[in-house]
Length: 370
Ligand SMILES: *[C@@H]1O[C@H](CO)[C@@H](O)[C@H](O)[C@H]1NC(C)=O
Image (cartoon, rainbow, N blue to C red; front, top):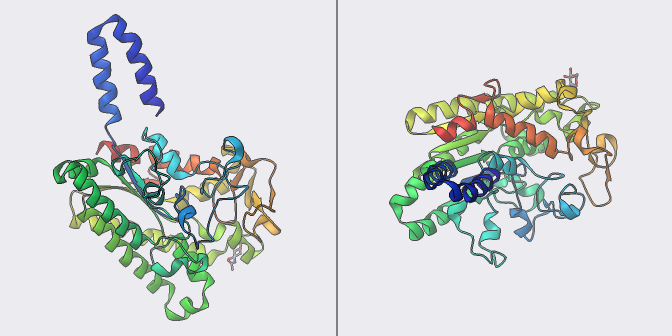
């Protein structure tokens, strides 16, 4: 956005002076703005930008105070954050507006008829790789259904621009995939699931299912994938309550297992489909770095949530009656499960720029150029 605006202002002035400067700058701005035509985002509450507000039965909604407290007028927008979330920062890095929620685009609220070609977010709070992950929240859009929605979006775009142009468009677009946390949370909260399968079996079937969905995206033209691993889930405020405010190690162990298998899956998948490009982000390592070196990032509180109630402000969700921390900038966690805007900004900076400790085999920046 900023880049484009800057270019436009510059264009106007330069056109008075030299016509040829005008054209060279124009083509420069134009080609830069065209690098990533759109972002198609899939995932859970870490990147939901409002889909769940359109789900009548869902209780996983950030549509009340104190969500969005750092936006103008302190407006809740469906983001599980005090302000922006990772989806916004990813879009910002790519010079694009945040892709709007799919359920907004197909609703009567879409008065300007915004096109699917400009990007769509299918992300939904409470969503998992497994369809049943959302039972606790009563309604969300599991990844399988998110991909179903993408297929219908794909069909509409084919009508709009034709198959060849669409394939070109999709091959340059970024497909963000931020999923898995709710499946792992669900496993630890459900004695039933624990009886049915061992953690190894559970993680393996998560990845088996995820691969099916990734392949469906590929089969419809997706080529560039930004895939985000799960964080140190045992260190979120809610799970710290299971271990006297220390990280709940069992959940961390399975977060690592999942991430490692996810990375192998991506490598194998790329061997099967040679034209896939992906950047993997190790949220676990990045979060651990923040919690171990908080002061170098300006954080003072690594354990407690900012919005909540009781011990670590994690006994209850962020509700209108919850109390707030005085300084949202110095907290890593906003509520029981979600990072603050400040932490999300740092994560996305690493997604985009690396270093390779966190972002491999290439950064999002390199993915754009690949
Ligand atoms: C609780 O935290 C301590 C210190 O980090 C760790 O050694 C221990 O394994 C943890 N226990 C559980 C059940 O996670």
